[in-house]
Each structure stands twice: as C-alpha cells, then as structure tokens.
Length: 152
Image 1 (tube, helix red, strand yellow):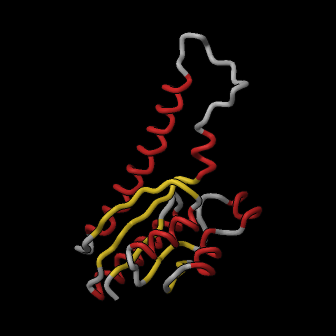
Image 2 (cartoon, one colour; image 1 turned 30 degrees about the horizontal axis):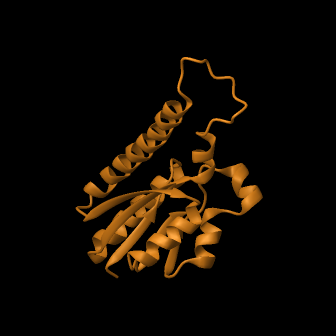
C-alpha cells in the first residue's frame, strides 16, 4: 500500500477517520492525499437567484465571487487543520479541494491518483442530505475503484 486518500468534511467523525488514516499511513509508509469536496449544493447556495432583491449599488457577480471565495477559504482552512493531524505522524501529505458531489469526486480522485485505499468516516455533517440521497460512505463503498475503509 503506497497511496491513501482520506476524505474529510467538518465533522468529528471525519477527524477520527483522519487520525486512523495517519496511524495507518505511518505504519506502512504510505503517502496521503487529504481531500475535501465542496458539494454542488453549497456552490448553488452561493448563487443569487434572479428574483433576489439586491440593492442597486451591489454588483451581484462580485457578491457571488465573494461567496465562492468564502466557501473555498473554509475548505482550505479545513484541509490545513486536518493536515496538522498528519504532522504528528510524519506522513507525506498533499491536500486537494474539489467542487462537486462528494461521492463522485472521491471516486474520481481515487482513480486519477491511483489510490490504494480510501479512508472516510461512516457519517459526515449532512444528516438530512444522507436521509434523502444516501450517505457518502455508502456510495463510495459501492462505486470506488479501490478498497475503502469506513471508520466508525
């Protein structure tokens, strides 16, 4: 095992999965890619509907750009936080921020990066979305191009 992909969001369970990934990577000498995905729904929420009542002195395009920057900044901050976990274990780490639907992006990155093992939490921060769409971990287990470890 040479490459591990750990998918994280802003949940406690995700931090636990990151710790488990760091322990394993350290033990086997694997490199790690930490991935967080800004979901399409979050990006869409940053869009302003045409019917929105925006004051005339505010440019909607600039406002959307600022919202997008804010979402990206939060993703980068999360990756920086999680990266600190791996520093304790002296692991080679790269961070990746993607936009899209998390299960699809996790599987795509795993395939493109020729990942040997995907590690993620059994639950994330989207309880309502999981009820309607199925959990990210369920979808990744089903469609991943490689082995998956789901941390409880």
